[in-house]
Length: 134
Image 1 (tube, helix red, strand yellow):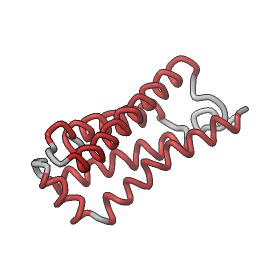
Image 2: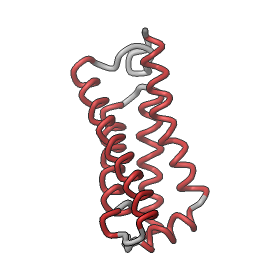
Image 3: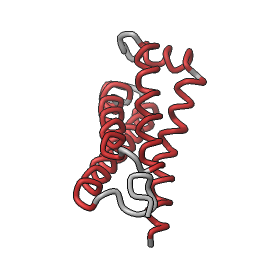
Image 4: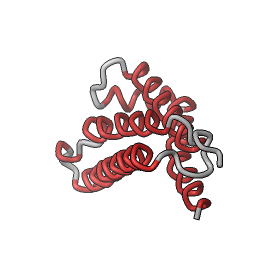
């Protein structure tokens, strides 16, 4: 059963690590999109959120400082859901459906980050982590 915890952490954390690389590799496009959503200092914010994703994702995958990683992920996902995926403000029905799905995905993944935080606080780091290698 220890393998399930490891696999779950890898699957969850790598989503954010991959997204972080997207932030860095597509900085101009991401910055333009953030700017179109009226994000102040869009390029700087894309870089900051990329670092949040990278740090949070790696901490979860490696199993070290997972409490901090869970909060980094949570505090990335919820504001991004509210600002970048504000489906309630989009008149086009098709675009609204896409943004609503992205909003719900971010909120759900944010909930999973809270569950991870609670798990680490309540049960410890668990097996197969750098925080508890055995």
